[in-house]
Structure formats: C-alpha cells, structure tokens
Length: 243
Image (tube, rainbow, N blue to C red; front, side):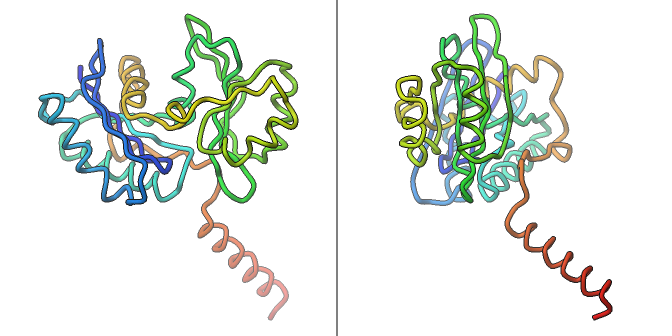
C-alpha cells in the first residue's frame, strides 16, 4: 500500500510517499510562498520521484491540525479534492503527533509547541517507549505559563520541538533550566513522510474516511469567528435592551 502524506498546518509545506517498508519520496519547503502555490507542484513531484501514478495510491493522509487556519484550510482542501477525484480514502493526522514522532523511544517527555499567536501555543505532552506512544496531555491551546504548570507536575526532562520554540525558549530555560532540551532545527518542522507514516497506521486500523467526512482540528475559534460571535452578542444585548 502506498500512502501520500500532505502537511500544510505550519509555515512549512511538505509532501511524502511511503509504503509499508520505506519512504519512497519526500519534499519540504519553508519559504514565503503560500501553500496554495507550493502544494500541488510538490505532490506531482513526489509522485514522479516515486515512479507512481495516482492510481497506485491506497490513501491520502493530511495534517488536520492544530495549526495555521489558512494553512489547514489549504492543505485539507487540496487533500480532500485529490481524494475525491482519485477515489481514495483519507485520514487526518495531528500536527503535534507528527512533530513528536521523530522522538520515538526518547527518554525525555516530548512537547511539541506551535506558535498559536495571542500569547498561546498549540501543544501536547508525550511519553515514548520502544513499543508505544502515550499522549499524557493535549492537544491544547494554552498560554506558555499554563503549559509550564502542566509539565512541572511530571518533574522530568522535556524535549521541546516546533516553531514555538524560538518564541518561548528563553522563558522555558528560565523555568526548567537544564531540564529543558530543544530539538535542532532539522527536526522542528512536520514532515510529509511522517504524516504518511501515521496515516498508514490509521489505514491499517480501518480509520480511513470519505473526503467530505474529514474535519479540521482547530482547537480554538478563528479571529473571524470570534468577531462574528462578538457582533451577535452585541446585537442580542441591544435587542434585549430594546435599543
């Protein structure tokens, strides 16, 4: 079975193809071009690099969040459209799971942090062993102080990874000292091949769905939704007051 993985939930755009034994092809870019420009050419390229046609694929895995609202919408729209046209099942994969996956078997707790703006991070806390992955907390959209309080309960060394690290690294070092370990830049971005690998695990469990049934994992409302709700609340207050 061949699985195409698509990642667009962060500033990185990535695509990769795997089968049950290995990675066949993978591409990743971290530039200022929008994902709507990058993704389709990358998907076409990884298919060509792998020597495959769309008809060879058994499914598509796509980052379903959390992450950038715009990036998620572009990635999901691309993956769902391709799955619909190619008549393939699709699965959503957590961006946080993808970031943490590189640390399988790692002794430290693993804590991906994505910069969610508004002084918050998207995060989760993982513990790995040689046989399984355990999510101890999350996924969450919380302040860095709230995350520190959660991690402090475990009293363990923590490896931090993700695009939120440069933003909050000094604060984390100040609190945790040598208990805070930071992943190198090469491991700080979600990869398309890892998205495909985690998708493969879901397909094996029979979790593939029809494209229209896949929903994003936003964790919090978008700014547009917040503004709309405020307006609705204001209108409700005015109506109740008879204004």
